[in-house]
Length: 491
Image (cartoon, rainbow, N blue to C red; front, side, top):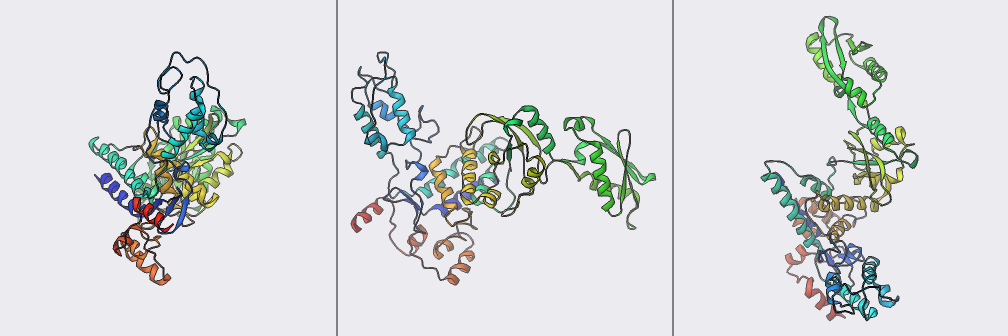
């Protein structure tokens, strides 16, 4: 039930933070409150969100041309959307001013259809396709931000319901991950993942598995089968789990030397010696206020938490084979569940440690990480926004995603996150309140004190162009059809 409550509250926050995103008369995505253009074409193609999906457009990422094909006939009287046994050859066509205006992905679908169908008027075919494309563009005055926010809430809530009706079994990805992405919370990243793609000379399964074992974070607790307490000798016998040692190809000499180094700096100190099954640790004493039996329990807990393998702040590593998000042939990578403790706005110790230890084996230009704060720190705002967009799209639209969300909505919401010039989420510490340029708009959100503290001091001039402030002041909203009417009247 908590996930359902969280998803509803998430939708409220995202709506409030994105309610001012509108398509203007030029087809640009603008923030009415800021008077700033966020994108020249929403979704990079300017099409209406949630355009029809079909066999030629299964994920709604482009324009479904099925209606166009059904309206066009071949020489034998069959629509291009249906099969024709009589069509035997391709239709010859020429580039024109119309074909040059069509986006490449749409033009390629149109020309591919002509490779197996015969039509009388190729020029008319492309001319009508261009008209259909123009008709499918987002309408001026459309409040795409609020609609996009509403369309986030529904599938995320459904995911919470699935978890509830499944007896508590959660979904992957989780509601928490979506909230963390859109709020851009400074708290620990949920489900952090990093992939190091190997260089060509190491692009094989053996190298990937070996590096994954080397990078896997293991604590002494993970490799010990039994801790035996020896109070008479003021020590502990450590018996290794031979299977774990062999699986991860661990070096027992390194473990011994590392623990000996730690023991020399421990208070009180302890010594380390090899045994036939592992190690024997002897303490040089115990605090006066605790007896040796109790202190050995404390020492055992301390020993078990020492990291003896893997990257700093990393997690378990796995060898993975598959395509890179940027495309190209499938290649081997080391998949790390980490960094476990990312620090927003700071260097990432795990990434620095990886570069020092395995930098010669992987190509840093192919590295993929879902920590937008580290990406912003290393590569800048645009790279971080691309990361958020990619992860958000994957969380919603992948096979195991929470639910379909049109990529154009995702684009609009993510573009808004970078409108201040730095990473800023859609929660109350971001565009909902703290980064709202309107005093009234900010007060209308949660925790109005965040808005009251900033705007009077800065002497903010509010044009009352946003939804909340316009309604509060009794001003007519220039959205939808009214926006077009007012625009024409001013001209």
